[in-house]
Length: 118
Image (tube, rainbow, N blue to C red; front, side, top):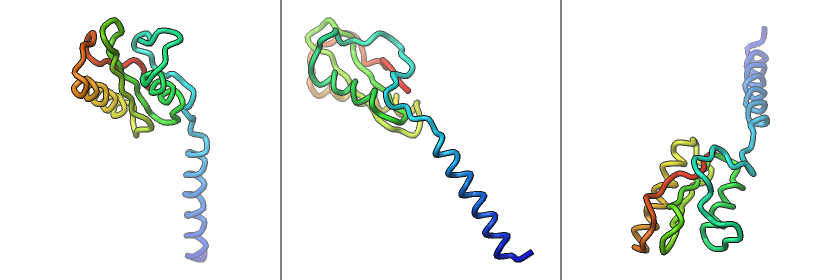
């Protein structure tokens, strides 16, 4: 058998395997994912955290949304979108939420917690 032909067949098999696994990978866009607690924003709420949550839902990759609990002066939130893994997305979302708490120094109820992740 011709070595060039054998190489071409091998390359085609590898390319076909790559295409088939990436073409059928499920998008996470539009999904809430694993909810750890109820959404902290009341119905009809507007503002930054509402948009952050909507962006989280729309993200097609591993993402997470974190927030403090409602009931104080302010609610803090943070998200991370389209990470390589769910764990790294959760870590970054908590970091973003805690960064907002440090920056604005207003009273909130409890620590930042993961609300949902996918």
